[in-house]
Length: 235
Length: 404
Image (cartoon, rainbow over the protein chains, first blue to last red):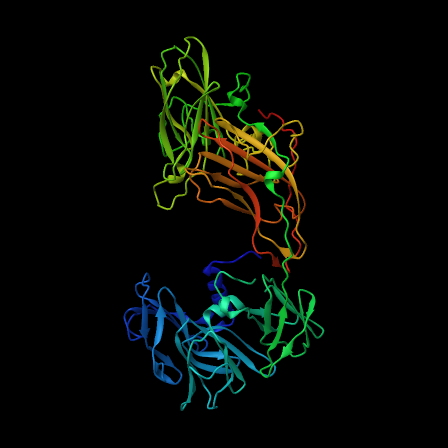
């Protein structure tokens, strides 16, 4: 294919993979946008999509002034199956940069494992014979938190341990991290959570479904990280 | 990435690569134990987390492209209308006393809106016949072709002047001084107008898309407007266009286009050898054609572009159309731009075989014009798993019945 140098292509890829992996999104019921309910700042607007036939809900976040190019710090106030939570739970704040928009999830099903919430966006997930894989991403320099409904101690199985903290709470395991260009994999029970930067997801990651048999796998093209300009695209 | 599939225990992946690329499989199917990329086996390792890793090697294929300036270019004058011998009896007479256009009322005795006569696209040519009284000193003509359009006017063989165009003008009212005319002698104006296409309309009710193309108004000094009788042409056949393969928007009203010489294998054997890089020494329109071969290796996706030079300051006023195997792929205005590079996809271009190029060059200034440069260029070659591209239909030139 041709050189695909515009961000629109990458954004479509991100949204497409997320929607494909999120059947509950189809059934969630969109509510009215609000600037007061789900975050601690009116600079941000959230449109909720509340779980209908499943428990999964989706919270679409953007700047209230859609032309804003500010970096806005915020905390989320989300309803979950473990009650109303103020996120991040382990300290720090979340950030929305400029014209970016995020979809935060609660009670999101990954092959039988419940993700209580994730502030990092989901690229895709898949259950394999011996493991489950969940791939999430965040923007450069952002701080994120993901909570898994489990009581097991998480382990970092790939990548540096600095910039990650984990804590086992009463009803979930919380993993907090600063987004890094280096890939990190955190394991909770049989779930491998890949923590990635948005750029490397955009450019390098493809969610592929096997044509024969009907089974899906994820393929990551790594390239040279130092030259991951958006202008260079593999397809 | 294009596809992934299992063949027994082999995991096959098809993908495109623009350089040597490490590749990882995060979740390989349980029964897979070997990795094939684009049909070639790739060695892989498996780490503690079950992730497969391998590398796809990229080696520059060394793409070679022909130098367009060195082609055997053939030339023909594509504005024979200004020659005294030219016969316009086959042309459409602009005799509609009313217009179908509900947006702008007529200000001429008969409609000179091209769409009233079925000409909706491409260059427009008007022929205005009159018998002089000898008192005519100037000619004003208000033409409209869309933003960045241009127009040129001749009286018989004499160049009268041009509106060379600026980006924001979709119409222009030009007044030209005339040479001395002889009383009782017949004369003909030839007016060439660049139709940039009909306007878009994004505001309800403004009806911009109905803005007509052609001549809105004119005044021959000392004479009634009805002193001039007009004929016009756009693409041959108008709405009953001839090239059903390439469609109604492909060709315009130049003589060479009406004949179909922009298509492959035009009857250029006995034409003069001359290149668009030599150009024209005076105002007018030249038509150039050349043939070249490409030999792009299979298995590579190589984006190709035709690039015009825009190297002279201030930029001379000329307009170019580029036809590739009969398909119009560039409309270039040297004095406005801004686009100078025009991609042409594989399938329009024959990547392994013969190709025909045609260029029309319209000089809108008295000292003529030539192309600064015309080059065929490529961007990064990509190892591709794309199926081989089949060329689209490329009907070659055949004499056109009734072409004038």
